[in-house]
Image (tube, rainbow, N blue to C red; front, side, top):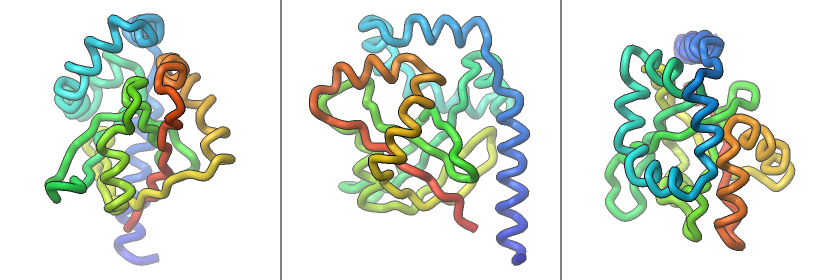
Length: 180
């Protein structure tokens, strides 16, 4: 095992330790109840992406855990048009060592920009509880999408609502494979 493999294993272990601290809170139950409503979607679509990175980085990720009780990461992608690094706060689930993210775009008709960025530049970085990991993105096939979609809806009921409102667009889902 190389030094890079050992370092990656250590970082994934730190993330796993953090994930064990993510538990449902009063705010989690409120988000799960309000999340699917039009008013909440309109409000949070505007303010969440601005506030969430700060919340996720606050106190080593503990603020996110205590406030939301949901598994969140920051995804850094390379912009298709600008070439600049773009950071997107996202909920995720795990599939073995891989991180799974889905681009619902709050149920809008267009895909979120970060998904186009990953299609063009699959090399990216994630940050979970201030642990940074390089990843390689892979657009999932239908079997993987079906298997993980219900898991996303179990984490956050708003996803089911988003699927109802996004028209014929199927949200892009990615496996983010950790890279040494």
